[in-house]
Image (cartoon, rainbow, N blue to C red):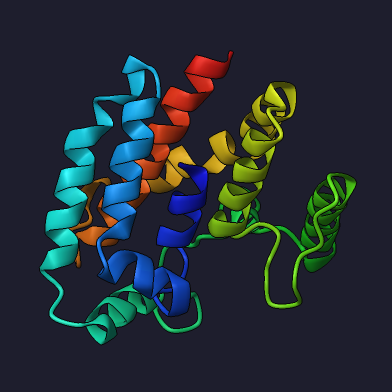
Length: 190
């Protein structure tokens, strides 16, 4: 499930555009949810609502505009950030943020993962993909640690910021869906 969530929250081009445009995100996510314990089944209705909201977009360009409007910090002030460091250290100096990012890359590296030059270690898509990797390794201790140290520290707050957001609807609902999934997964693991 984490793999699909990481792709869905990435910029809608290439593989992400294919996943969303083809409906595969919804089909595969529904299959994944059904295979999980009953605590996850409540997310099925949210998944259906997400599919309806995405269908409201006439084309990929409209979805890209909404994504950029909501999440590109340089384009729209105020906007919402998909970067952990921006959410947990909004006033931190560059040096502190650089140390945080380096520590996160070191954590990934300790698991054998090397990010490409374009991947930021604290982007939500990157962190969700790392959780996918930890799940594939069946490393529950590391999953719990990463959820506690990273995702649970900021994604629920991001979802809360979106609670009154109606612009575009798809991405606010997707963020809320991700936060709900993380909450359930965290409770199931601990």
